[in-house]
Image 1 (cartoon, rainbow, N blue to C red):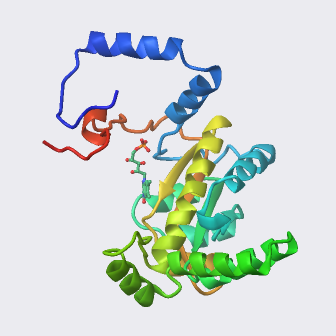
Image 2 (tube, rainbow, N blue to C red):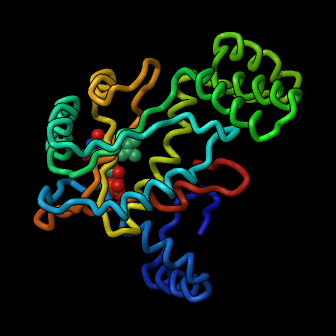
Image 3 (cartoon, helix red, strand yellow):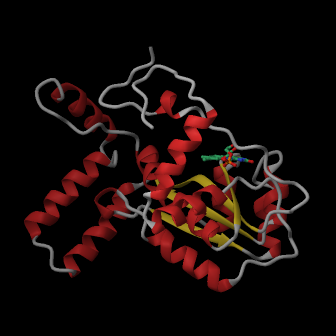
Length: 259
Ligand SMILES: Cc1cc2nc3c(=O)[nH]c(=O)nc-3n(C[C@H](O)[C@H](O)[C@H](O)COP(=O)(O)O)c2cc1C
């Protein structure tokens, strides 16, 4: 339930009744989705003796492709590291406990975000031209996407902040932030799809992006917002208890309210 800001304790009984009512009116697909979301946890370790079935991986990648992105630019790539030797090289690009996860997991998906958006936007324009987009629409797409993607970051920021006093202007971020922002929906899609196949994952940002790019042979200008160890969790080390802030602290209606 959405709170109007103020933190409120609800009794456990009232909460479970509300939840029961909510569940009984939910479409079947929504229940399945909640189940998948509930099954996803950040796995603390992986069973290295259980491979990931190729059929599951193919289906996960199909879902990953369906992730939305700004102007449909799709400015990311994903390298699935499966080979034992490459996994070992990759593992030592990570920090702390992540090293063991990459060594154990049969697959680690390295998500690469394009921090040179002109490359991804160029590819999109070629594809849209082939699909019959008119020249004037192509130029508008080029201008709008390049502006938002931070291709002209300093200029874009200056234009955006001064013009926004006069008219609404989209906020401009750095090219790296834009690439990462457009990569994370795909990464999330990957994790949920993996959970739907009964697989476990652990997203990891504790890594040396430059070294990871070297190991997977990424072209210049890519960064690594996240890599996802994938496999079956070891039953002997379950994830820590999951907790989240109360909904009333996180969700508001119409206006942020932290009173
Ligand atoms: C962007 C991002 C980076 C993360 N980086 C790491 C990491 O480097 N190592 C790790 O063990 N877990 C990492 N996690 C997992 C979080 O610690 C985990 O999702 C969080 O504690 C909540 O637990 P849950 O996913 O099981 O609900 C990361 C999660 C996200 C979304």
